[in-house]
Length: 77
Image 1 (cartoon, rainbow, N blue to C red):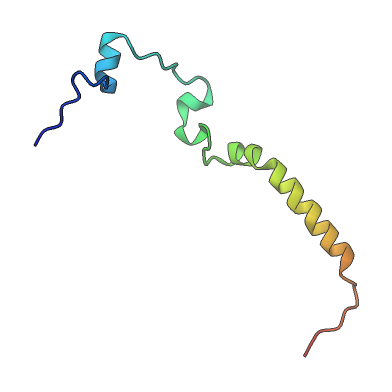
Image 2 (cartoon, one colour; image 1 turned 135 degrees about the horizontal axis):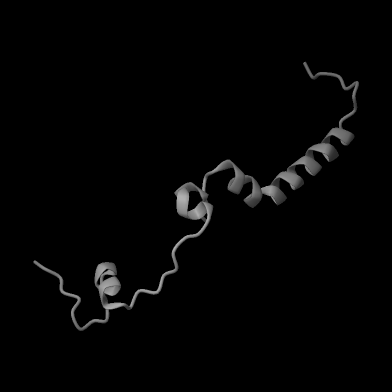
């Protein structure tokens, strides 16, 4: 059983490149060198930039919790 996409408007990526219908822009800078540095990447620099607002909220929450807990609280036995 073969599936044919002829006439249905679908074209493979290779066919689109050959026929000149592919208009994707090439990656520049660090994105061209390392695939982990692209959008939603896993390199530490990009991940820290992406999650900066979450880290700020987390540290603010930790500070607020630290203020609420008394320093000489008793342990429950």
